Image (tube, one colour):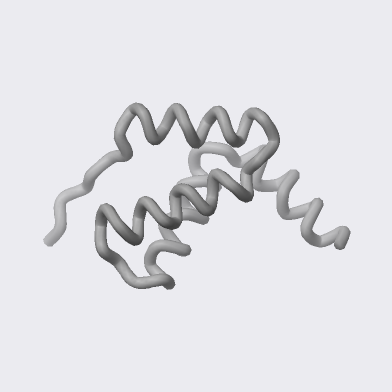
Length: 72
C-alpha cells in the first residue's frame, strides 16, 4: 500500500497563481509533468491525478475551463 503524499507548498502556490491568473491549462501541464517526474507514474495515471486535483481544489475554474472547451 502506498502512502499518501501531498504537493509541496511551493507547487501549490504556483498552481494557485496560474489558475487565479486564468491559465489553468498551463497549471495542468505543470502538475502533469510534476506527477510524471516526482512520482514516476505513467501518462494515464498522471492525467487522472491532474484532473482529480483540479476538480477537488478548483471546481469553479474547472467548470469554466470545460465550458470554454465545449464552445470551441
